[in-house]
Length: 616
Image (cartoon, rainbow, N blue to C red; front, top):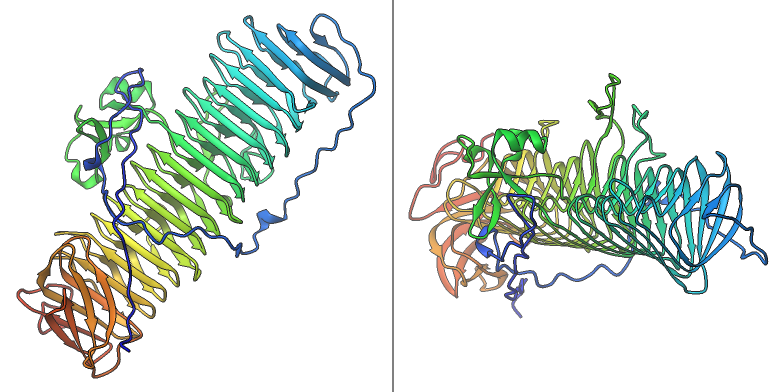
């Protein structure tokens, strides 16, 4: 039988989900407009990762202290809705507010059994001093805390809060944050927490949850917000983090979905995050009001929606360029900021530390965001044995330093750039990535370093890009796996780097009049340019015995093809087929050869034929 390696890809239409946007304070729904981003590409064969092959990580060593609370036979009493000392208190029925005035260091237990606290004059549940508060939801009860008063949170406790039990807690603030904790917040298995905040839904120094269900909505700020104390002036892993294990989380926000100063750890569970961006046009007043910089104005209107444009395409700013008025990323780790001169304004940031987003242990994450889906400032992003589905106007996953993907399923349906980091490393035999982008598919770039590298060691990748397919500002190493790249036209290349190394795996990269870069190969690789092969054509690579060693159906036209495979051998002549018809042949006289038909294909070292297009 003929030896055939066939890549079967079925058509699957992608729909750009409209994102709430506006040039004013109002929130108007932007209708779908698929012209704003690349769409209608294939995302089949994206199978969920079901076996946990996550590598050991220091974050896995963190222990979540189990909250074990016994229900007392008697409760302490209080008067005038005020709790003045440590103790255990039972709440049921209706209250206008609950105020805890116990001394600093007190430990208060609140047992909620179908309670409603509704304040129209201030905070509904509050503490005036730094205490430890245990909230226990009894008997599968549903409990509600709400307020509607200017500049006040609904639930605001100075200290540390533990929420446990087997009930539901609903929190709503009409004008500020829903659940505000000055120190650390812990949420345990069995708890269902529904929070609707005008500002943040949840805000604390750190947020830890295990086995909980969180449904969070906001009107202006973040779904989960973890910020270090004001006096922290260097990186610490003791605060400013979000730590979620086996949770079921739904977030719909007009700020970031999850924002942490130091790190985000997500292990197992299901997470569905949607963020809505509001756009403002370029003007001095908008820059001042929303604290924007010129680089923020990187969007243009496209029909009834917006799309991002490259910086080098913006010649001069005008009111036709737009910026997001605030950050609306899906998951973001930011740098610690602090006030260094005592004027009450953060003016200094900590840029050195182990900032990281780590997603692993079969976590299932779906993000639809106006801004980047996953973004790490001054740090790394690690996706390990997890399943991600991403849609965004901006970047899918980005890190200022290292982006690592291992044994993960990542489906980027729409993006400006799919994956980006100073160093991008993709590994794991179970890794399966589809990246659809209006600019680069995978980009190794950073403002913090010039040594930007892509390492593809294993996995199955399909990249559909309108910019460069794989773009490394320094080196691109193709060491293993199956890599398919389609899409870029004139001025861009399917593969773009200072130096490209073909060391292993199968690479099929096609483009229209793409650039040819410096290349070297330790396995047999060829570059073909000539006859245009139309979208829908079945392209095959056939050896002299008639065996098709690779076959793929194009999604768009191309006239340049780069192919590398361990199945090619020295001296063998290979025929390039389009729908069964020969469009050219290549004889592997060395590990790296070219065959140009019907036009010169320029590159470093000279044009084709003749010269060495791959440099030294």
